[in-house]
Length: 103
Image (tube, rainbow, N blue to C red; front, side, top):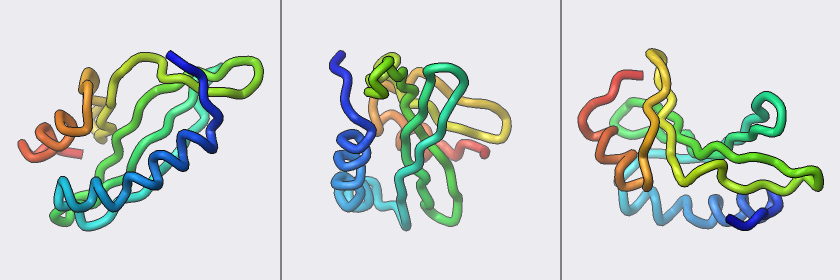
């Protein structure tokens, strides 16, 4: 996978917000980022739908130049009980969310 700048990734995600809102009928959505330990970095969405708020992200690794690439093609849903892993697309994330995940 190709390394991209943080700005390129955030720009692409910000441009997708309206599409995501319409496709998945969410009330509100925003992009978040978080520095992890070592060279790990997390970028994803904070989503509000039907009164519930949850976060989903993709784990990234950062190289020596500060560029990022997905650690693996995976979306993670953050919950209070622990992370749910292994989603290969936002479609799968929203499918799981529609089952009424607790967070």
